[in-house]
Structure formats: C-alpha cells, structure tokens
Length: 315
Image 1 (tube, rainbow, N blue to C red):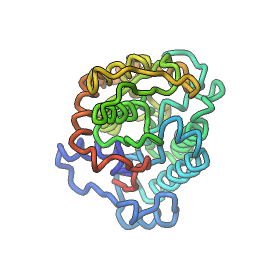
Image 2: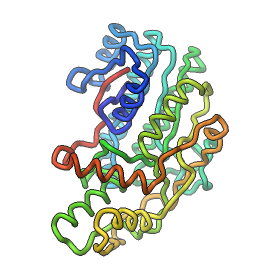
Image 3: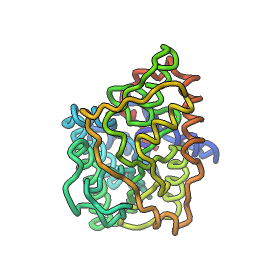
C-alpha cells in the first residue's frame, strides 16, 4: 500500500487486517521515498507485491493548494509515476489508484459523471493537484493499453474520518471545522470564522466507507475508465458548519469571511456506476462527524500539527 500511514492508508490497513491478510507490506517514509524511481524499483524487486493500493500523495485544502502548487504537482506526479512503473516492471497482478473529485472541471454538469473529465477548465485553487491526479488516471490507462497491466482508477469525493489532518493551514474543510469548533469550545470563544460565503455544496464520504469500496473494487472492478466513489448526497458548507457546531460547541456563532475563496461552487459525484456494481456507502454524515470528533478528542494532543502528506509505504 502506497501511503499506509495517511488518512486513507490507515483506514485500508484497518479494513485489510479484519480479514487477517498475511504479508501486508509497508515501508515508512524514512525508509522509502516514493518520488525516487530507483528506490521504488529496488523495493518492488525485493518484495514483489501482488496487489497495490496507490493512495499516497501530498494533499490539503484550499490554502495549501493555493500556496504550495509546485509541491502538489511535483510530489504527486512523481509518486504516481514511480509506483505505477515499478508495478509494471515487477509483475504486480493488480493496482488500484485513488484520485480525487477535483479532477473534474469547475463548471461541469452536476452530478459529475466519469465522462466529464477533461471537458473544461479546472478550479484554479486546486489546479496543480488536479492535473497530477488526472495524469495518474491517464498513466494507469496507458499501461493497461500498451502492456496489458490490470491497473484501475477510482475517484473518491471529499473524505474525512479518524486519522485526518487537523492542521488549520493545510487541512480540508471538515477537519478544519472540527478543529476550529473544538478550540472555541476549549477557549470559550463565542464565534468561529468560516472561509468563504458558506454557499458551495460538497459531498463527504467517511474514510472507512472508502476502504470498503477500495477492497470491493480491487476484487470486482476491471475497466479502463475510472469510477466515482461517493455518497451521491451533498450539503452546503453552511449546513456542514452548523452540523459541526451543533455537535461540538452549540452556543458558538458562525461568521463567514467572504474575502476568502469558495472554491468550486458545487461538487457532487454521480455514483450510479459503482452502485450498479454493487457497492453503497454505510456511514451517514452526522454519524461520521460524531465518531470523528470523538476520535479527535481522544487524540487531540498527538494529531494537532500533523503534516498534510500521506506517508510512504507499499502493500
């Protein structure tokens, strides 16, 4: 598993360990830099993984994407390239690459079908990351077409859950809201400031549901076209903030900073293809937020300030 210590990677490890899989191969970032082709080749040659979950990458919210675009495009292009190429060279039976719903154009039709890819300009605030993710899809398709490798791609919607990044300068919206309202609760603050107008609409998927979907797709899916993974349900950022507020600090007032960007006005995935294949999400949003907040409370001192990079490892 590439990225076994990140948000998705830890959920996948929990899921795979339930089935008591033997030989779950991992390597810490200090042991293996996934941007180094020679190092990745050596690791694959020595370990010969049969199945690879490629979930590693540099990730973050609007601020991180806007201020660190070079890191986002370089790190992700290199990680995708090295792992896919090594999987081809050393006989991996199947590889699942996970992208992001930000691959779709800013103004595309909603809900977003897989066919919307490359039909228009991207959202400027996450363009570098989106381009790298699109390249990952095309990389898997190219190796399938030229060499016959069984490499597949899935595009999850916005993720959250235990093990998320709660750093306010690099996190995504939901963990950032949990952190802000938790801090307000501890400090007795009466207001929490939310970026933007609150009007954009977003879809959220619990990371444990994505882990289930990933195992399902590794077993059941075999197609060149990438496949969307989500709930098919959406809320406004205002509604999301109100839900987090009600769970964490009910007396706090919301203040929206309209000088900050909203990002894409709407991002809802069309998940009809994965539903037709037989997979559906199980964890509803409020339940997932409540359990994630409970995890944050138990681990607050250890997770605050964690970097927004999925640590390297391969299974």
